[in-house]
Length: 216
Image (tube, rainbow, N blue to C red):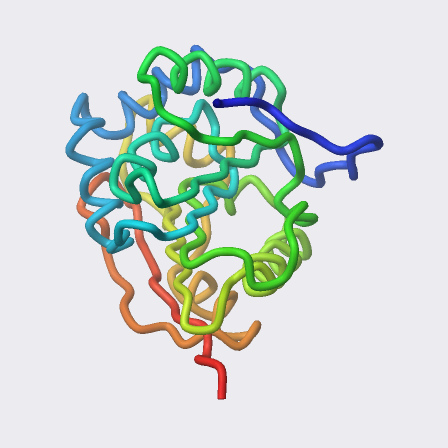
């Protein structure tokens, strides 16, 4: 069953927390040039989700990517999504129930993930890091590393600086971006081995895929 869980009291989220769930979905559609489905499939291909894997979506928003990840992970897989906004999570739960997809959504900040060490094969964070101040980004990276299993993967996707004009470009400038070198450095600094990085192929989005050391 899909549900929202949380802790009491919740740690305070540092950074910009988006609450307008309907506007968020519209922004994703706009950012992808109306090709949200193709954009999502591109992210999932980069993530290389295998059946049976445990997946965490950090800053899951309204849950669309987490639901798609569960389809890839299959019946034996487990997918969790966390977000600091209860409004986002409420919409995510409705989406998952309509799709009859079993995803657990939890209200929590990205800097304090409510999971034990070494819980996940894959951790995703998509268009979220730029909302955090730099110390918050570093703490989020440490937390993603902590909950990752040996040999597990982190896929981080975010905006680089954009030379575009128009509404989307203005939103980029308002909310910020993460420099390509910083995205790689964030993951490398916490002991992850960045295997791939580059442009996603939508707007100014970039990605970095990193691997945790295998157990000795």
